[in-house]
Length: 307
Image (cartoon, rainbow, N blue to C red):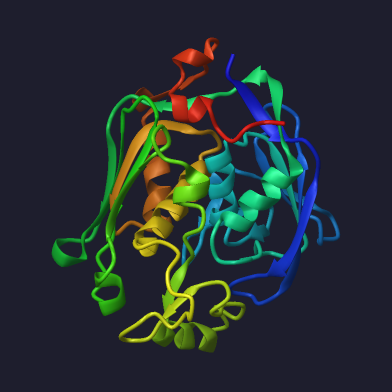
């Protein structure tokens, strides 16, 4: 049986929110089988649990925000991406503010935290959402067009194309495909950082956003070049970060997908619309598990080792 996964022990981190600039403490704790991933605002007078699900996403401007009973957690996508990449099914995320810390701007710090806590197998079958029919969402026309789609695939594969008219981005790969069967998330995707432009950062700060952003947790560009002294971590780091984000956004459906995802200029909003479009068509998906893990896609059966 291909089993569910949680943490072996708890682990903590302290950082600042990318947009709020607030100090925030994060505690990642094991959870029982079939719990899913649950964010818990422990700083409130009455702590509120926010269970991860597509319908819990209430804001997609600049990041993915989930809410319940008036409590919010912003910028969940990098942590969710790490959970997807490591195949974690059940987890409590205790948080002392309304934004997940940005740490280094990628998912690699979250991968380190989760692996340091240890990954434990649980005696319940891991449940997947298997896409049976193509589902697609689109926004805009002509040069402004964006789209994202899910198609049937025995595994989990993502392809993404960006289209930025900027010298630093144009000089890099703008299209990438990542397949969990043939790639390694921790090596190929997790280290890709979020990125932004100085002109946008100045505007966002004037509006009380990006207060915690800087060269230590993002790729920052002026009108011509990358300003980070250490350059890029991958030749195609920009588009790989879009894959990282998409993995986090899609994992907000609450279970791992068996599907091929492809997108052109998509973002948090379109990714969530895609999940909602899938769930609105019950004939387009089914919930499956693998009694014989040899029948599961190799990349999803042989995730980061549990110990």
